[in-house]
Length: 278
Image (tube, rainbow, N blue to C red; front, side, top):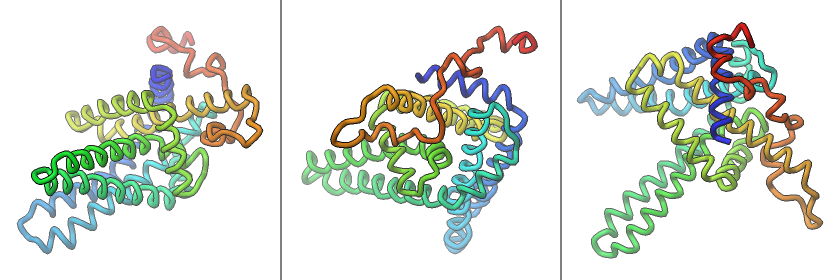
């Protein structure tokens, strides 16, 4: 399934490169401008400047700019995947409809990450000498939970815009997807990590491509999971004591699409070399 998600993301980006580059520029501005200004202020030797200027700028970029722009990209990606067409207006529509909830999701993910990472450091440092087994066990557990939180974050933006849930509902759906598809989630995270490394090493990639490609890839992965669960919910018989969580996690926005009916999944290298023959 991961290969199909990568293939879908590739063709979405190939077919709509111009729109996605423009959207990525806006995404990069929303993230990079306040973050770079904040890091510049943080590098100064003035504590007051770091506290009153750097901290608010970093929070603005990471806590507002990143989630709001990512929600816009996720909505745009969902439209491109479903309708095979769209416009930059879908980016702004996603910001308007989901921006506030995206900030709430980002705040909770940031709070959880801060608590888990600080717990991992605290117990390893303060119990590592006196009670090493307990200290390192708790530290390792905190790191594993943090990894789970980070994996679920990959599905947060697509879940938010496609299921249109609230903050807690979005986080719940993202977490259930990771629990039900751990290997797929790990493979997706490795793809995103590779993209992040390339973006850092080659700054033009960050400016023109990385955000759009990252969101399109995660949205493609979410879309294929949604199709899997939608198909399973149609084929399965409801349990007498109540339905499983699988169906409601990702389905409900439309009927499932078979792979053979999806143009994004039925093109190969020849179509890339000779697009006019497709």
